[in-house]
Length: 332
Ligand code: KG4
Ligand code: ZN
Image 1 (cartoon, rainbow, N blue to C red):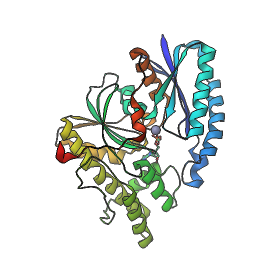
Image 2 (image 1 turned 180 degrees about the horizontal axis):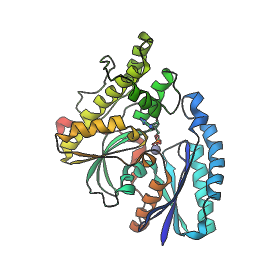
Image 3 (image 1 turned 60 degrees about the vertical axis):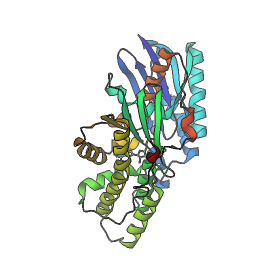
């Protein structure tokens, strides 16, 4: 059985997985280091690099390469933390040399965008992907593998990033998304309308979350006696209101009926259920991968590696690194 080994080290998770086109994910291990970054309220690049060294050794020891017929080693080439990426690339090259197979360089964002195919092997294209992670926020029209059209992105902070930063303001630690979602479930859902929702009525698919983050912070400081779960629910609602407007526009513009939410913040059940509820009226179905494939994982990198092996073609996704959408709705 021909398999691809996937290595992901772009941020704070060290991930190794093996994917076979026929049988799906055959091996997957993650070494998480977020507990070390917790007290800093975000990822510290040097700590991440050191932990990846440890993580790669630990995970590699658990992998019995003889059991699999590895055809290629896929690794994340970016975007991400430079040192951590470099370590992953070096590790991948060494394993590939040892196995005498090729390396396959993968764009992390393509991994997230296609991660839905890990659990729905025959997922129907086209779809609109809302990628919301710690490093990125993108709205993408996915016609097929290797046929992506960026509709919008954020001008400043990403969705996961504002969850992390607001959690830090509340003194709740990193990663902020799961912590804020947990207290939300226990708390009331009363709305705080005072949190800003920037770019809501502009004529592009782009986002801005920096102002939302600042106004949430100002609000919290003014009402610091307010229950944190109330603040969290207000914050969740402000994020949702900002996201849904452009998502609905994108679905209408592309006439697509499938929305796929991916990336770390797609683990947020409250947000995803709200999307499903709101889009039901428009006959749009909402899909998210299981939590383990929302956050960073090696399986999505091995999966894309497997597509690339079949296509014998490099990704054209480098344009992702510095892209801002130029689409103006009025001109469409
Ligand atoms: O995709 P990911 O693992 O790494 C990047 O590619 O950035 O995403 C990590 C981000 C963090 O910012 C984290 O706070 C966010 O995903 N996240 C969440 C939740 N779980 C993780 N955000 C909102 N709600 C969650 N339940
Ligand atoms: Zn990611």
